[in-house]
Image (cartoon, rainbow, N blue to C red):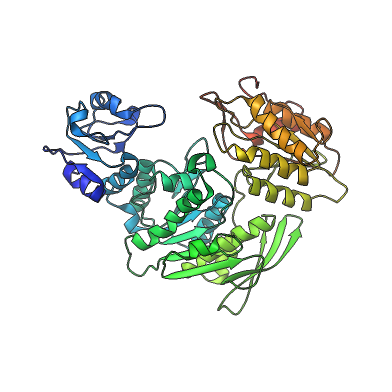
Length: 514
């Protein structure tokens, strides 16, 4: 595609167009290490480096054109250069144009919210797949395109804008007609999904998270709201309504319902005034039996699911709401929910023959931890103990460190505070803040809560405290495959670590936690 043609995608944000044109024959990238011969390099100023200083390197690696934020007179660029208002916001639009706007040839369902996004995304995918729809999925765990299952990253996030558009293009080329796209607040705010034309927007909930990045709860909510705003701005596909699916149990429901859509579909687990209403949930030996009704349909739906907890019933309602928007029948919805395989690292049971329950969950926010522990409490007898193991990430929302420790002190019998991606912060300082939070709720160190910096040792310690019938739950890492100390990602899998602890062979966190 000609460079000048690509620049049309940026619209009014284009500040300066180059006099010369060229053919862009390779994908767009903002990483000089990924530039291919014939590619377009997008330069922006980041937190730690200014990519405008890397233009020479990008050209040496084969870039034939560059888009950046500096005026042309302030860059040394031997190839055609264009200036835009925000390179971060432009790269998604440029990538969409380069790949031929693939989302316009797919029905795209976006799922956002603080908690439950991955489970809801997988539920929708499984319902549509069971309906015989050729559907792909991009989640924080993997991208599923036909028979391919491609890991999408070490830590939870929406993939980069070029990756999102590349996956969508591959779905179109594979003959798929639908895509379910897990859409994070970071992905929305940073423009990673710019150029994606959504058709269905699904909200799980909005609670305390990522305030380190967004600055305030209102900004965080507004970032989530971009998904719903984009419905009104998106390309309209023949015969496909723009639908918003919103959780009425969330305190912010009215905010999201305020965005225009062809249809608003609401769901509730706490009341009865919604399009989808939870009727009853009964714990079963292998999960839950859940019954819910859909307005305008004569019969309710009863599903037997391995999912547990009220929060997962809300995830089921959210997924069913998206399915209703896409005209799926009750039978299709029921079959898709019941046949969904377990989601990695989401209330995942680990069994090494131990006489107590052991679970790994991704809960890494105060609300998610509360819901995970409330569910854990339902899985054991009243006299049995719930033992929680978790940490709080460095260089992330600092306020939630105390909040998570407070939640666990209230709901768990024993809390073990440990490492969770401390990054360049002091792990001892993080644990001190969490210990203060636990103590503020009446926790007593050495009796109801402990600090064990090494995560492998913490899991082993928790298992040593467990008695028959108790429950040990490791929260915060879930499916993730690494742990960050300093600036290095070290291999780490909570599920493997918990298995090792149960076998009496605890894994050590690398490097030695301090």
